[in-house]
Image (cartoon, rainbow, N blue to C red; front, top):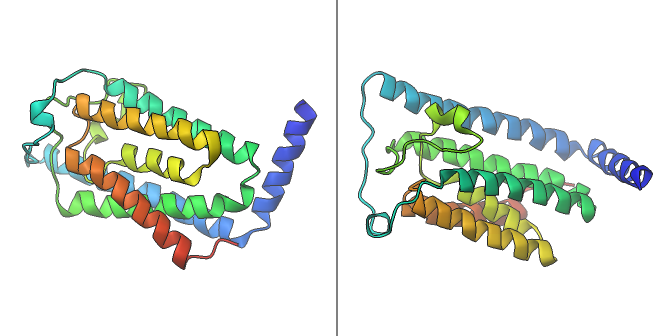
Length: 210
């Protein structure tokens, strides 16, 4: 069994390493991570200088109860990522990895631009994620669109079969926990879904990955 797993991984890596688009989109993905981090660090610097980011009213958030379950959407998002990796391995989707990197990169770049264009403060009652990633709490700025929502939705639409059903259920739980814990405004969550689908469609139509 261990030998089969090792052989499968070697085969998959061999496919990736022979695909020039893998290197191109991997570099793009790294740059997108840096851009997203820089955008959030910029917003943090604004707060350090005394600039107050506006807190907005929200039709849904203002009319539902608050629960301190911010840890849940962090855990579920990480779980969905690991499940998606398993899906890629189990279904030998190695030739699709460049495309995955491309659309993840486009989402990160788009998000880094939007959160800087119109800086908005976190919703009322949000005091930082109380989860495994709370070490990055000082950079939990930039709300539009929701990265948690966007990525779990991408995992959902990129998968098929039973895994798609499972990832769809996780996506719904992530969205619900974001609402209840005030992790994002309603428009961030809904836009995360729309942005993710638009990027997926755009990437599939206009970019080569093989």
